[in-house]
Length: 235
Image (cartoon, rainbow, N blue to C red; front, top):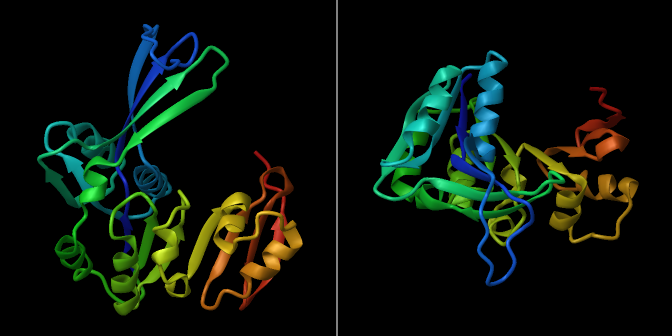
């Protein structure tokens, strides 16, 4: 069994500021740091550190992607399925104020340049029983799901951020959904629904099991073929 993470790769530019920039205002930052991020990269790093052999597929910019590739290589993730494009890598401009709060401007960059031919090229090396890990930060997500499903892969999706692209996907082809309470309510169109009713609605989605993070209330694993299991996660 192989694990393929078709996921985002972002550079996070973090600026320490006294306050968030207002309309028409120019301010100076006290400090600036660059970090590797993106939901995809973070998941691959976590898997690799846990001892899982993970193959990361995605895209970076040819001029600014070296740091992202190095971050994955350093933890043992396979980067042979990452393409370089003559454009900027995905990145985030993050203002962090004195209180530790932040505001974020996100640019998809190379993450949004994942094409059909590239997807087919990657997936031909994976087969039935392999795991396909996805997030909603790369282009052609619905096609990746369809192609992975055709190959008999076990599909795991973190559908964040929730937007129109998620509703273009056939979620019945997803074996495991990993989401929080707000994302679950958004997918179901049930923003005013309580926890118990939300869990009941999720179990009616054919073909998948769901992991729902209710914050301090605990984690629920629910699905048509499993019992609900809820418990608090201790640090």
